[in-house]
Length: 280
Image (tube, rainbow, N blue to C red; front, side):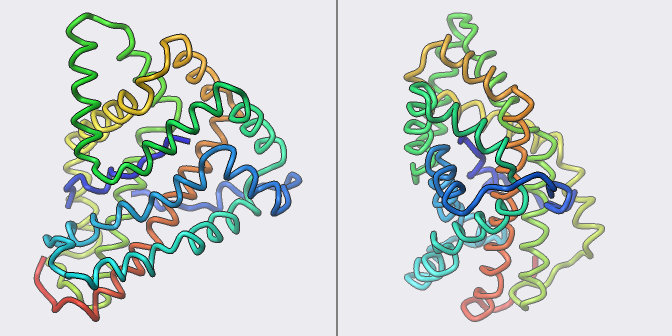
């Protein structure tokens, strides 16, 4: 599953994630089925890659990870522990994912095309240098545009099918707000505006942020799916546009964002013992 990771690197300074709205009453899968689902869809690797977004935390405070020396890597390894994030995801999915949705998504990703897509997406998730991925994807897009290729439109369709842009924007804003408020509450920073003003400041930058998100997603898709034919990209887009798959992706995105927000709040608390207070 191709989910957003590096969007938090966008400097924006709100909708609550609200997983309760995704609750279900239909029969839910057992733990073993959920574990298989995470593996076959690649969502287990997507969760693991959340740790690679950790450097966005000090950046949101006007700092760099290197400012904390070796302590930063120790913090990341402890706060973004793969097993803990995995258990959080399973705990949420046990109460929100139905057998019907699990079966639908698993059957697609277990197919030949689905399996190859997961391999490509897993590899893309774990590329630590987002700049390299963005640069490579940007060059691919530039080349496609220069020859008038329809593939750019296909990649845009694919991105649109994998998650609502508005929901992504609101969720990213919420992660940042929750982190900044947690950092202020821990005494790491002193906010010069209250929460409503902070939300309004973010809303005032939405157009710019939306453009950056869209471009980042397009570059990521161009990089990730470069080995797939146009016909395969179309087949993937059609699969993602199915109502059941849309529900699965809405849920997966919500789970990922909730875990990111939770872990960034934990980072804020840990920074209290590592960084003296400063104004923001």
